[in-house]
Image (cartoon, rainbow, N blue to C red):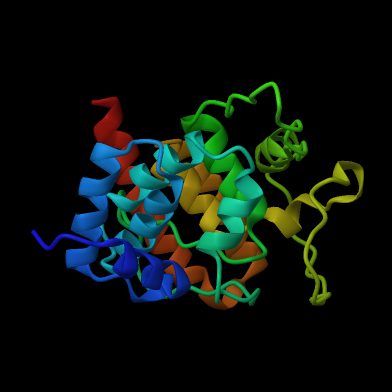
Length: 223
């Protein structure tokens, strides 16, 4: 395994998109020796994402557990990922790295809320800024089997702190559906894809295929 010196590590912090497979392995060794070295953990995340590694999702959860402000972590993993319309590129497989866009902070926090504990605040730290969860709002939206009203894109981020002003359908994205899938919440994932099929009728065929796969996974889980 290739070792990494301080100079090489510093260069990676300036250009995290360049982390190679060998450097990712070196970073893993550093983390093993220094388990609270957060900078090494976030660089390892970039390396795992570059490799499309099945280890990425779990590494992201562990990194979030040691991060006092997860909005900073979200900004880091979505660097160079501008807000853009919903799109589908490939079928989703469980364990595939979740790919969050800059407008999907809710999906990111929803996924982490199930899997990681709330970071412990030290006495000399300011309390983390509270981000209101919209989980109840989304759950109700899904359970009501809603009709979708198409709205023109506004071209700006959703303010998650203003829960009462949020339209649930604006938070329903393909990534959130895949978050439910990754959490093995098959019923919610199926309903989410149904909603997306109404929201994006031009991609209904793709979403129908995902629903078939989910129903198959759901049946295997129940057997």
